[in-house]
Image 1 (cartoon, protein in one colour):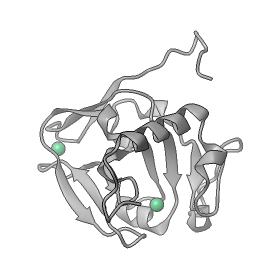
Image 2 (tube, rainbow, N blue to C red; image 1 turned 45 degrees about the vertical axis):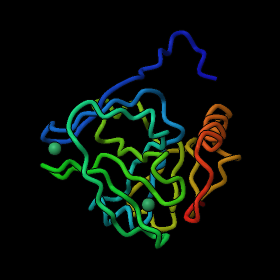
Image 3 (tube, rainbow, N blue to C red; image 1 turned 90 degrees about the vertical axis):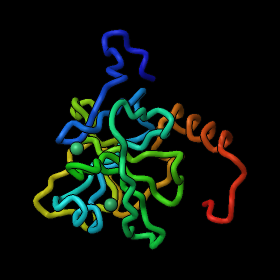
Length: 174
Ligand SMILES: [Zn+2]
Ligand SMILES: [Zn+2]
């Protein structure tokens, strides 16, 4: 699907926090990019939405520094772990209960070239700020969505491979 020779794959590329103590590399294109308009994301960012690139944690390499994982409440009630710089406290990515530590939700704005990752879908548009106008052509859903309906085949395959590679599920899986 991405075999257009005139459109070179920009990956890998790097990102980091504001004080530059933390630097990381995103090795490949993410699985999918969510633009989330839920109230929780609005509060967490202090803005109108969050832009998260979902990617296998093994494809996010810490180049410099040590992250601090801060357990933060999430809407599901199961919490999320937010990876922050221990110095400037900027948040680089989150791990959610569902996929656990195997998947990072990278905050797209922390990449050096965030322009490469526009949203693949807008979610929780039922709480979208009314002045945010969504572009035609990008899927938008009132709440959440089915991966099978929206993800490209390659991402579905990667998700299957990730699930298969993980150790047998413990009591907190799911
Ligand atoms: Zn920092
Ligand atoms: Zn959200």
